[in-house]
Length: 584
Image (tube, one colour):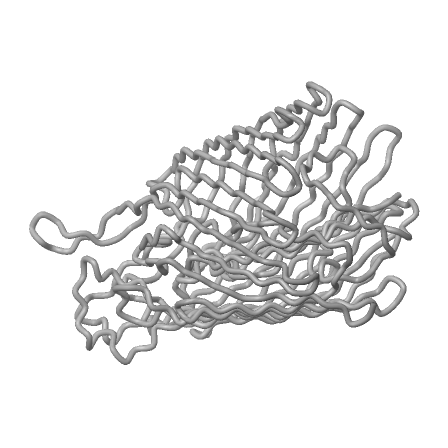
């Protein structure tokens, strides 16, 4: 059997590399048009950094592969803008030869600097080693900000792995560092004296060391699994250790497959006593879960019947937890009109650990004193239709009803007394976020439409509407509406371009307002909806060299990604990418 290996380097919000390798299922509804090059297996960056996403390889002949190599666009992210992790993707360069390595450098206004280096080399018949270095930084300069608003993110990863007919494995080790500033002071409603913020460092620094191992097997009962460990810490003496082990097993029956996933997830988080209260904030949680299911399938349908059982134990700020939970794992789809209309439905759930590192990845302006505990998804009941309206027009519509216990939401923290600010912590100016938990039910309606006019022009439209109901109060920082439009065009063999438009609806948060008597009052506030327009253009000068330019937030809106956190205005970045091999 020939594998289809899709290799793509997608540069997302903070210019991170996103590349995938996958064996395309027989019933796949992917719309990708391919330029195929049959060649022997070679190590690439994809093997090193996304091997965990690679589905199992069949037992058939693996000597040759069908390769698709594509380079996407180079977006400049509006600083801290939501939904930027899926910035414009323009397939502008399909090559007839494979480059294992690349270097990229870009520079833009706000003194934005971006650099990447990805290297992967084959060192044996099926073994590769790889390294990936990524950096993005900006010196800031947002209008109306009282303190520094510069930021930077850097990470370095090393990988070694192997891909064979019967199994593949990948060992990863990496480090990262992020620097941000709590620059979101509520200066629109509060008058701060320069003495209260001058000469104070509002910076926060996050670091992590992580190691992971992934293994997939195509023979025997043991299907594979993963082990991960991350040590995360910050400049305020916070510490977190996170262990995750996930072995998987499957058993082949005559007309069905029985799967068993085992998950062991432990996290311990400690925050230093920054306020000299005599209380050290600490939380830990251990989740042990078993998820058995059985799958039935035919040419017209597939059904998965399963459930999960989990024990959740731990302690958060002195409050103990020891719960036993059960949740569904049921999915089905049916081919209503062969290869044209597919109906699908499911009822799924789960329980997962929240971590300080994950909260920071979503919102780097959280305060270093969070209460952290797990979230349980009791169920996610969904049903939908997907298929094709025409040979080059595909769609997907879905309705979901979701019930979550202890759903985590970011909430703007209250400010310390104004007369104590100069001696308070720098995250106590109403410029940081805590986490609130509530039992939330969500109705979600989602739809997408994909138009592939040719290999050289595509349009992707998607949108969703959410209606929330919380047990104890309003939901915070969860927009009701999200809309996305993406256009990708290859104008010629050398010129390419793309357009993205994002719309994020109104959100609620806690904040400060001036009441009728002129006094400062803490209240629920609404963050305005916003739209963000992004354009990119590039030129492939040679097979090795590509130059590009990207503009973001071209509406030049000073919208708020989080309460009081305005983003940079119009941003422009230009740069070049060089692709190369060390050997032919």
